[in-house]
Length: 305
Length: 244
Image (cartoon, rainbow over all chains, first blue to last red; front, side):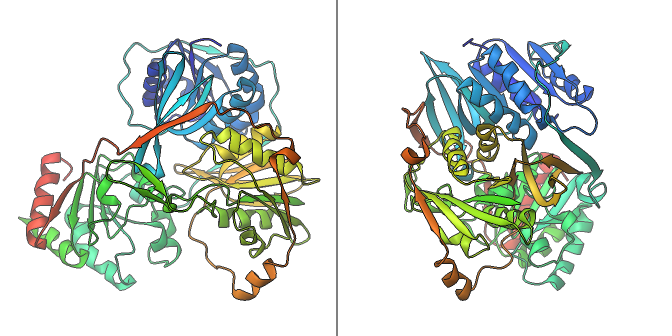
């Protein structure tokens, strides 16, 4: 086992933060990028020591190469293998963990060497606590996606990789998500509503606020799924839209982790909720404790001042 | 097609109390159905089809009847599965449980946000291809067509069997079983087995827990008071942030 760290990446998001985490884990940092050239270039821009790139066919998901790449990683025997949390990257990671004989931890924030062990901090209980774990032996870790940090060095060079193994037969067809291109995905400001809204008719209450902010309307999962008050393409959350507005204003949303995952990249999150114990008040940047039916008109008035 | 749906394989965060010092106390250590498990059952039923067979697989002292009330014909329960921080260990137990069921075409696991490595690791342990982050699935020839979303792109992945799907819930369970289904579930067969019977080695844990603490950023600035006052405070703060 070497003291090096590998990062397996099948998607181009959060790579700078992931490379920074890999640097902290120690040794030479190699990114194994599996996908189009743009992904390899994004990995190189995150400034690891090297990028090894496996180009996939347009209709081939990265996971088709999971077993073949696991053998490549095992041959290099790094002491730490990391991956961002997207489904393809963590599938590559889990495959690599088996031949490495590595422990598999997820939602990992940091990894550092200490004496002969690895000390891992990870997010647990939906982000309510940070748990510290000590790992003996190699580690495979799915990272908690972090805000991208600026790279600390010049871009790395990209070297093509030709695995000895073959891919398994898998095909992927990619299509734009209906209704996803416009609206909330590109909006600078998003006002989102949750179960704190009492009826569909009350959506009209938000019109003045949306206009005053120049914001798009979004919602939590139950408002689109259970109640059908807002079109499903405006639902923000783990299996819904992932957005990065400058301002995300959550009204009557409790702030469950699966919802907040959709706004992890928002610059500022503000929340209005009548429950001072609502989880969103532990994660938002700003909170107002109050009834949204009173606070929303007051916000419109304050914005006009 | 025979599908194994894995359910109630982890403790629920709802069963934990977080104390002011960041310590965690578990009120309920028993594995319970996770928020993605109903979607996993639905995907297993869809993939197996009307003439197929859905077998439940659960761990520890979970309520085995949960999936049986939702359409699984029978269940396997690994009674002494350990609650491990190492998701590879959890996956190894699940994979051994899957191997105890003959002629499995697909394994469906809830793609849990709290434990996002387990579904993929089950596939790795079995040596089967994995599609994670799936929101719906259907049979397709000799394989499966699985749909997932990545940003503003919808991906339809076709994979040949045997395969593992990690299914993420898009919404809350739309219909919970009634009393009649729950009573019928308790009459369906549940096979109990152990790690020893499955041939799972109980090696010393490579991962040792060292305690918990509250996250450092208790950073929310909360305004309380009259709506006019709090609204002005929030607007002023957002203007200062430069986001208005």
